[in-house]
Each structure stands twice: as C-alpha cells, then as structure tokens.
Image (cartoon, rainbow, N blue to C red; front, side, top):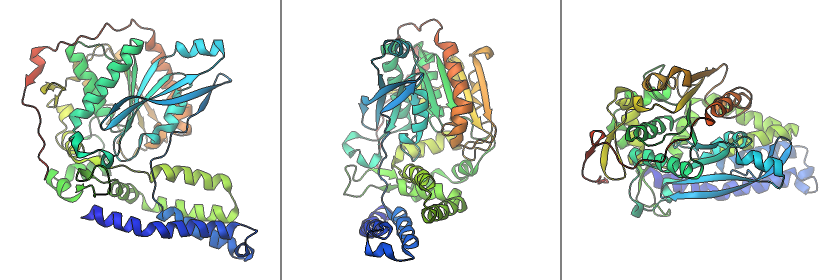
Length: 448
C-alpha cells in the first residue's frame, strides 16, 4: 500500500513541480514583466529549488560520445551486447580514423565494470567508465529497474546475479581470449563468487580482478549500513521494506525494495550535508554562479535517480552477505544455470591477479572489508596481490572524482597492464567436477 500512496503523491506533485519550473524561468527572464521586480532573482531561485525538490528523476544517460586518447579525439558508440531480463551488458566501442590511434586501441585490454545493484543506476559510474575508456575496451553491467520487468520473467535471485556475471565474463573472453573485471561496492561479493566458481570448474578466469569499496567481510569495521543489516532480522526487512509494484508499471505485482525507500535511507545517512548542499545551491542561483549550480544539478540528477530491486535478490543479499557472512565462513552455495548447487571456494582461484581499493573515510564499506578478499584468495601468490587505501577518500571518491582519476586509476591501470601480457587463458571447459556440485530440484519462488 505504501508504494501506491507514494505514486499518488508523486502524481499530485508533478503539476506543481512543472509550475515551479515555469515560474523560475519567468522570474529569471529580464524581458519578462515579472523579471523587472527587484526580488525577481530571489523568487526565481526559490521556485527553481522547489522544482528540483519536487520533480521526478528518471534514469540518466551516460552521454559518453567522445573521449581524448593521447591528444586525438575518439568517437564512442554505446550499444547493448547482451540483453538479459534484469540486466544489459553495455559496450562503449571506440572509433577513430587515425591509423596509429586505431592500432593502439585494438591492442588495449578488455575490462568489464560490474556496477552495483544497490539503489542507483550504472550511470553512477560514468566517471569510472570515461576514465577507463582512455586505455581500455570497456563493458559495463547496466541493471534494470525491477518495476519495469514483467512478472512473466520470473524472480531475480543473488544466484542469478552470479550467473549473469559468469555469462558476461565468458562472452568477453570469447571475443578477446581474456578479460579483466572491475567491481565497485556491492558487486565485489557476487563477482568474487562468480570467479571462484569458474576457477573451481577449471574454466579460464579473468586475468585480473579489481575490487573497490565492497563488503567482502562486513564484520570488519562495521558501518551504519552494516549495523542496520546485521541488527534487524530477515523477517523485519521482508515485512517493512518489501512492497508490490503498482499497476501502472510493466512489473505490476512484482515484490521489490522500492527505490524511493532506498533514497530516503541515503538522505537519512547525512541529512545535514544534503540540507547544506541545497541551501548552497540557492545561494549560487542568487549569485549567478553557473558552475556551482550546474555541478549541483549534475550530482543530484544522478543521486536522486533510483531503481527498485527485486525482493528475492535484496533479501538474499541481506542474509548471505550481512547476516550469515556465508562468503567468509565458506558456507555459500550458489545454484547454477543447470539447477545444481556449487560451493563458493575463493581459494580455488590461482591465476587471477587481485587488487583491492578502500577509502580511508568510507562510511558504507568500512576499513578492511574489501581487503579481506586477499586472505580468502589464498591460492593467488602474494606477488599477484595488491591493496590500496586512499587517504582522505570517502566511498564515492575511490571510483569518481579527482582522487579516482589522480590516485586510484593510475594504479589500477598499471596493475591491469602488468598482468595483461601474461599467457592467454586456455579455452573454457564446460565440464564441472562432481565433487563441487550437488543436483537439486529447480528453484521455485512463492510470492506472498
């Protein structure tokens, strides 16, 4: 019922937001009679702020059409490589008519960026993609809003997430012979599981795995986010944050953790910071600071755009990652595409080099949570492992902004390059050791 109430409120606010936008333009136009008023600028700024607080934020576009590679402008074409019910694998293909640049682009490593499915869209990693495009062939997982996925597509589980990642890795490996994987925040856990399962089967695994700010071991330096997930029961989450999608969406009837609830949680973590940001935006409008106002708009256009997550996936993530700590306890069994359960064993990874990145001031994934991957991946030689802690960086600073571009990326780029020239992986083996799998009945989902 809460979802329906929210949608009714949003529909009611829409005309008022449109009116506020029109009024802001009317009072800011010097040729308008209203613009002659001595308080016109202040009134316009107030209406503009009202519009941005009341408007509906849709999924942003990546808008990556060109990049500069060693002084040469290179065109970028965004296209969908694989379209799954809950995710698209997007590729940012680069084009140039400069022969030397073209030769350079062809020889660069292929990287799959696994974006988080934790409330925001993959466009949150726009800066990550833009930076990596200068030196890599880039793919990214673009997760779909669960409210747009019809019930006929079935449920989406954490196991399905792991299976998607494996399929994407095999796809890129099939094109280039090898690849590298970068995971940011939430996907560090399912990506580590996916690569572990591939290693256990004897499949070729990515040459490198970059894990940034993720809850590999959420017991270490728990944050407010961790504490909420650990201190509330599974039943509490199911009864208090799971709702059905209203009838006016393609996914009507699907049980989800709604995006608007997630957004409320994001804001509640730092309410004073957001209040100050909006007040600063109002003052920038009064001063005519175009750079400041544009920076605010860009950030909140991204930050306020949220998606619904399928209930099964969300609840399983809470239980497996934050309550049972199944990955670090060695008790996580993942159901593969054939309906078999496979135990996740990170120690089986032998050939994939690993780099972990943490922010000193990260208030979402605490210190040591991502670094814990090194102990789990005991089969990887220490010479092929690296850890980076970024001083002064918060959660977003390790994959977006100045610290990402100046501190993190150069080390990630060097790490990938150092291991890219190693012996190519062997063709994938499809057989799975019987000891690693257990045949079970296909999963069925009972929806309440």
